Length: 148
Image 1 (cartoon, rainbow, N blue to C red):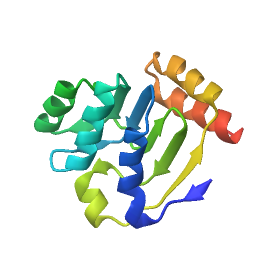
Image 2: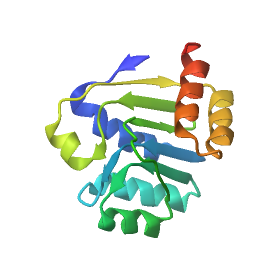
Image 3: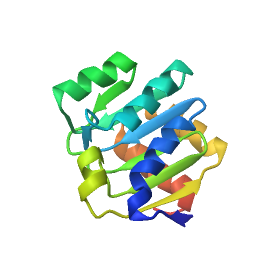
């Protein structure tokens, strides 16, 4: 486990996207990517590499919804969502930062990252198809930290 410098959290999320091999998942209550060109560009590049990209959110602006849909991102609305979690095939970031450029520029946030075992990612991907995010997150923490 590694603590991420607050000035590097947005860049780390963008790097997770760019280093994704098969899957990138973002869980954030609010999505604001309209002006966050670097993340959008990395999402487009990942999609061209046939990376499966899923976003779970509570609220999203129409322009962001359409931009992500045009890229090919799968979007899932979860009422009451408050979790901020980002992961790809090999690594995850747990943070207090929303995937919102404003948060990257103006919020004081904390985050940590760690490598994850392949079996955990596969198990999460299968479990996510149920679309029960509370169970998914609980399962994630059980598998990673053997708690809850």
